[in-house]
Amino acid sequence: MTLRLGTRGSTLAMAQSRTVADALTAATGEAVEVVEIVTAGDRSDAPIPQLGVGVFVSALRDALVAKEIDFAVHSYKDLPSAPADGLTIAAVPLREDPRDALITRDGRQLAELGPGTRIGTGAARRIAQLRGLGRGLECLPVRGNVDTRLRKLADGEYDALVLATAGLRRIGRADEITEVLDPMLMLPAPAQGALAIECRTDAVLAGVPTVELLSTLDDEHTRAAVVAERALLATLEAGCSAPVAAFAVVAEAEDGEYEIYLRGGVFSPDGSVAIRLSATGTLTDAAAVGRRLAADLLAEGADIALGVPA
Ligand SMILES: NCc1[nH]cc(CCC(=O)O)c1CC(=O)O
Image (cartoon, rainbow, N blue to C red; front, side, top):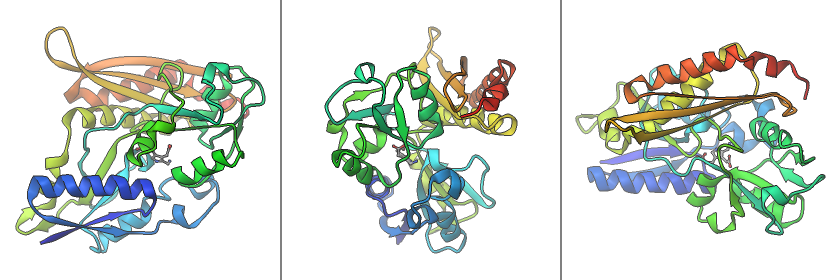
């Protein structure tokens, strides 16, 4: 039997899908066929906020529901926080590096960049944190796949880019990174660096529930970290629409049990307000840790951050 894996066709999506396909074949012995699905996000050059959340996801979910594919591989951070009817995240594989990376044309590090440096990034979360440094950095919108962005940097359209380390590693271009940014300075997007493997909840392949087949790829610690980060995002989306960042690490505590350390941030678009807080909890409590930290952020004024004009 051949399992049909649905993915976007970008270099990054293809690279991560091939890795998943190989891992699944190694774990189950089943062949995997990679099926490219064109999403609205791939068809348009409009800014993402204009296209709306889920532009990279809806077409893949439609293909799942229509049974054109057996499972989909998504960049987890591109998934809307609302779950899809009849679909489930069957596996969250071991995460790549969740941190953001700076790439500059002349090799200067973040601390060396002066006023007027043109940084290509359209992400409100990155823009707010870069502005918040108070260095007069100029953020310019940039669209396109990771490889397209790197070409625009090389062409001189920008002096620097901020991109996810994970994406650069997956397409084999991590050697171009100037500086991996410390999460204390640049807090990443919830679920950055993680993949979501989604299927129909009730699907069965060769007599085995698809969820069970795919669960061989699940990494318990990555899933707990992502659950905490996404619970924070979902809770804040209800109460505030400022840019949100979250970063969780799972580590062994002194008593030998694993614990989640979650750090979250909410920023005003102009970077003048930044609220960052941390929380800790057990793995089974991952969602509650995220919700509790979101409530703490709201209590510290996360919704006020939104009221500050860009
Ligand atoms: N929004 C686009 C997107 N979705 C996932 C990644 C990177 C890889 C990942 O986080 O898994 C990127 C590009 C980027 O932010 O640099």
